[in-house]
Structures are given as structure tokens and as C-alpha cells.
Length: 468
Image 1 (tube, rainbow, N blue to C red):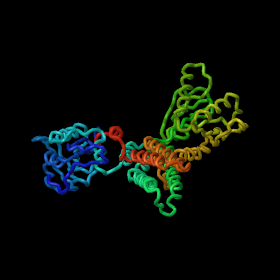
Image 2 (image 1 turned 135 degrees about the vertical axis):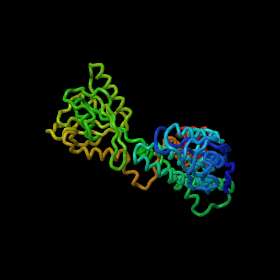
Image 3 (image 1 turned 180 degrees about the vertical axis):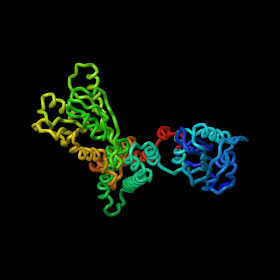
């Protein structure tokens, strides 16, 4: 196929050479379905397409054509084909897509035809990796692709779409440019000590760096909200026996999932469910066994698992029986939860019953009054959990990260800028500050991919699915 935009060998940041071979993979999930898509990318994509879909011929790029799909002289299916000329494609290379009937057998036969025509099997994430290497996206956008595919909630998908639009990479590039300007000014002062700097430039360096440092620290700190939006808020519902944990669990998920009884120790294993709020925030609820000294070995294992679930949660909802006078064991359990290192939200249950005096025991965190039986206060509790899951964050005009790799590099970059500020504040030689500022610049480059080593890039894209 003759294309006006020939695919050239490209480089990005000196990382590695783009492969000259052509790859192919099934881009849709395995299993039965109406349509399966086979994606082909590389310099020979047009030639492979002509062999597999001869009806496509010299059709202009971007136009779909219906016809037979051939494996040599054998017809394996019929469907639509389309060609995208470089650089106007997802990968930035010549790319073709074949839409055949869904199902593992048919899709496998069409893929085999493409491989026989000159393509090789794509590795996981190789299409997205080529897109990155060809400058079609940076690493923050590539990671957003993976997050969008794996989104478990509408909120997580919305956050991924914002990062896919390039907001994060664009801002980090601006910060890198600002660091470059500061470094250039400091080095000019070292190179030409007798030359006067521009008016106000010397005094402006420290405030500029302080502002950049705070922004990097705030951005790193946004991970706490971002990862909850992406992965959901894991909520462990814990407390003493008969506090109403299972009743609250049922009220929050809107159905009778857990067995409720007046006999202490009814719950012996973990029961999990996922609740999505009206604005798409995901809550992973875990009902647990009542915390007490248990003689029965099965109940004792349930108590152990309850403590383990509390330790692995994002937030502990500690259910308190508001109708019962607290005992010493209740006080000790409360202190244990407060010392767990997890965020704790106290929920005073059984608000429909006469209330006991619980003052002086359950202190240190906010308490929410509910009645799991009548539903009183359950909506308020859901709203509180939604807020803790980051539900309000997406309406704010600020950048949010959800990737732990990005968080660590941002923390390192902020630490280097802070070190440079300390050096300049003590009037030490500015070339020492320049070393830290360059290190900060490199850390930011690791996030977008311009300075990331090849093994890191390979590891990121290896987590992608085939065909993406």
C-alpha cells in the first residue's frame, strides 16, 4: 500500500530505537462477542492489510472497507478493515485494524492470517510503548491508559481521562522549564561573577523555588486521594460483638448480605462487597467478626482475620453500641484501633434505642450517629465515606496523581529542591544548589519518561494487556 506518510526510524530521548518490524495482536477481550478487533502496526502494516483484506486495496486512510479476510488462498472470515497512515495513528506508525466476528476461534484465525502475511505477535503493551517512543504520549499518559482500562469506578475513569489529556505531563514540563531557568541563572552568576544579574532576579530565586517545592509536595500528597479514586476506599467495619456491624454492612450495601442475629460471634469470616456512590466513587466494604477474647478456635480465627482486615483497610469504621454502657474491654479495643495507624471513623449505632452515656471513652475522632435498623444517619455516613474516598476532589481545579511511582519521584524532586533552598538560604556556593536542582529535574523527567531508563519503561508497559 502506497502511503504519503512513510514510517521513519524514530528516537525518543535516546532511550532506544523503534523496531522496524510489524506487530499484530487481538485488541479485544477473549471470549464470545459480536466483534473482535485485530490491530496491526509497523512499516509493513499496509502490505499485511492488503494480503489479509484484499478488498481494501488502495483505499484512502481512515475509510472502512467490507470484504473477505484471507489466510493465503483460504477465506477465514468477512468483516471491515481500516488503515491509518503514520503519524496519524495511535502508535504514530502505519496501522491497520481488522474487525471480524467475535470469538476466540475466528479472531485467532484472522490473527494467524496477519502473522502469516508478515507481522509478528505483539508483546503486552507494545502498541502503547510504540506510541510513547514515537512521541504520541508521555509516560503519565501511558500509565493513564492502563488506569482507564482497569478502572473500577466512574471516578477512577474520570481521573484517568484527565491524566490521559496530558494535564500532569504538561505541568511537569513547565516545572522542569522553571528549574532550567533557575539553574541557568545560578550558573551564569558562577561563570560571570562580575556581571550584574537582571534587576530583582537574585532576590526572586528563593521565592520561586519555594513555590515550586510546595507545588511538588502538594502534588505528591494528592496521591492519598488519587489512589482512593482509582482503586476505591477499602472500609473495614469492626467493633465488639453485637454492636450491629453486620446490620450496618447490610444497610450500607442496600441488601441483606450478612447474617444478623442477637447471638454474639455470629460473623466468623470476612464478607466483602463493593458499593458505588451516585457520583461514581467506589467503596469496598468488609464486614468482620466481633473483636473479643474467643475460646472457640473458629471464632478466634475470625477475630484474627478481623484485625488483619482492619490493618489493611484505608479506613476503619468502628461500630459502637450506643445503647450499652462501655466496659473496660470496649475502651481497650477503641484505643487499639486509634493506635492502628489507620484512619478511624466512630459510628454510634442503635440510635433508635435509648442511649447510654458513652462520654469519655470514644474520643479523639468524629462520631456519626446511625441506626442500621431504621436507616437513620446511614445516608450521612455514606456521604462521609464518599468524601474520604475523594469524591469532592474531581470537582476541584487541581492536579491529582494516583500512581505510586509518580508519587515517589515527586517526593524525591521536592526533597532536592528543598535541599537547594537550604543551600542558597545559608549562602553556600550556588553550584551545590545546582546539583540538587538538576537532580530534581531528572526526577521529573522520570515521571514523564524523558529521563527514565529503558528497564523502567519496559516494566511499565509489560503490565498492559495484549493489543494495547
